[in-house]
Length: 249
Ligand code: SAH
Image (cartoon, rainbow, N blue to C red; front, side):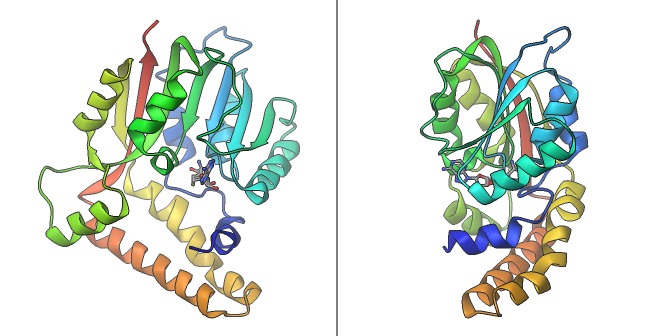
């Protein structure tokens, strides 16, 4: 996979995975932030910062926004400056499996559409050490919505992400790794279509122009189109679940 091409396809979009401001705020509503002025928050795999901006606007926290892509982080930095929030958002170019935080130093670890990169359980285990006792983990993770599904769909996901599971499986992972589940909910289709796929689709022609219709770029667009059609067909079987959990304190 050509990482630079992927970044170029996604860099001008408001978000790089399914979600919405409404759903970020819903997740935040389960976390007690009243009167907390100096919250230390990490937003891991932040992309161009859709949820980072929401967190900055709705908490008093200091947010370290971690991503591997300098291009995405630069977009986030511009967004933060436009809203005069750059004093509370620190962009950090770093891999999510090698974080510089001190142990037990964070109040909230947030991650939308990114923990799968480490794998859900590995991510929960590794990141937990950076949370204070009583700190919160808020992550979205691809999840099955039904106990049975068409074999073609099952095959696709087992290849793409074998850790995909039911909501109850994700809850079990949280519990066996020192967390008490606080809430969970499923992202509605609009988080995929209107907020994620539609801006990608609208950007196809300018992306192909920038890439001078290279074979690789055309292949990438074709792959994205297939993914969208796949979602269209099978959306009643899978979505992102949003999981909010509290580290034992
Ligand atoms: N949270 C954002 C982006 C989700 S896409 C949103 O919902 O819009 C996943 C993000 O993880 C991308 O921005 C990608 O650059 C980033 N990423 C990929 N591998 C990473 C790694 N090893 N460490 C940190 N970030 C990574």
